[in-house]
Image 1: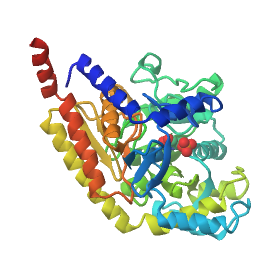
Image 2 (image 1 turned 90 degrees about the horizontal axis):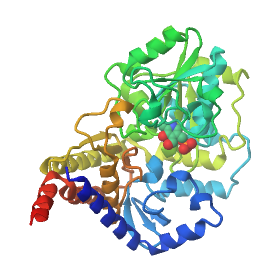
Image 3 (image 1 turned 120 degrees about the horizontal axis):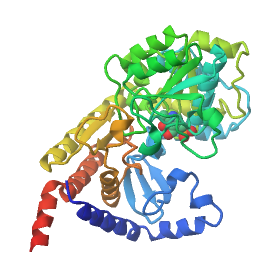
Amino acid sequence: MTTDIKLREIIAAQEEIFVRRQPRSKRLAEQAKNHLAGGVTSSWQITAPQPVWLSHGRGSKVWDVDGNEYVDLHGGYGAALAGHAHPAIAKAITSQAGLGTHFAQPTPDAIAVAEELAGRFGLPRWRFANSGTEATMDAVHLMRSITGRDLIIKIEGCYHGHHDSVQVSVAPDPDVAGPRNKPNSAPASTGIPRAITDLTLIATFNDLDSVARLLDEHKDQVAGMIIEPVMMNAGIIEPEPGYLEALKALLHDHHALLTFDEVKTGLTVGPGGVTQRENVQPDLITLAKSLGGGVAVAAIGGTADVMNHVATGGYEMVGTFNGNPLAMAATRAMLTEVVTPEAYEKIEKLRQRAASGIQKAIQDNGLTAHLVTAGAKGCVVFSAEPVRNYRGFLGVDDRYSHAHWLYQHNGGVFLPPWGKIEQWLISVQHDEADIDRLVENFAVFARAVGPDAARTDATRTGD
Ligand SMILES: Cc1ncc(COP(=O)(O)O)c(C=O)c1O
């Protein structure tokens, strides 16, 4: 790969182009600071060199306030599987808006959505919420409520939202992460009481022994475990064959429950998530992000036993906006009209097109990188070796991810910021030309940062 100095120069040059292309965004970013904390609506929108302010989206594209068009593979952090302004979603929202947007009473769409989810994910009973955070919070409460135990196990490097119990060891710095074979419970944010952090035990992905050890050390005290069945907040890390099945058996041997957090994977890896793909049924599933076709909604699915606990009042799963009619109408349209078998076939063809183009550019330019894809999701991981868990992920070079993000952005492709952590999302409205733009930009980037570029540079310096 290129030299550190050259990489710094490349990033600086690309950031300059980025800012130059977006003068109005720059002005809005300044103005916003007056009354929006940090000048944004969520802290993850604070990205270098400056936040991008958007005006609108249609199909596979979004436009910034300066009029620049982008192929949108950011997908609103993985939520825009339907693309933008999808006719079926727009129609569902418009007609429900004319009939009232909120009652806090169930509407028939909720039954249709629950039936669809049961068919896809194999769990019979469902409830709804408004964000992934709410869904995983309910799942953790439910595991504790059913078992009468306080401790939970979570995987180092998994993100499950911003409630206290899961804001632990999300992306811990090496100096607080603890020993590799016995990770610490490290608070992922300020404002989380130590007493709550201590109730969350940390295991290593793809390492059954790390879970077995915690279950033995804390005999009869662990309520359950929450896991992203494919890790998607550390690039993409796949479970090794048999891992999820064995995890379920191990937890059940200890009368503990298993939650698959499919907020990110959900409909994006396939019609019934990782649950269907791997044919392993957990006790609980959480969904959000792409579920509502771009409208805020979340779902919690459970086995008959687990959800009977809710049905009989053992745990009160509540929320004013749960099952909101607007969200249910959009979700019903998403499930019945948008993420159809044909849509998945199309996405699979585009996934293959992106994969072969990018792999070729990696090889042609001798990059120390590899590609990982899972359904509509994909990312380039800047390390030679495949990554098995969070400790491996720590070795990935995020300077290259940032440089790649800038090249794509300046070349008219909007990938999610935080490129080392995030993935692209191909929507049902993308086409081959969109993917070709991604691949072309990647090839330009690869030529700029590959070892040949470094050699050229060294020769020039020698001159
Ligand atoms: C796997 C996973 N779970 C839960 C969440 C939280 O979802 P939300 O941001 O909707 O609260 C996220 C968000 O990125 C996530 O990636």
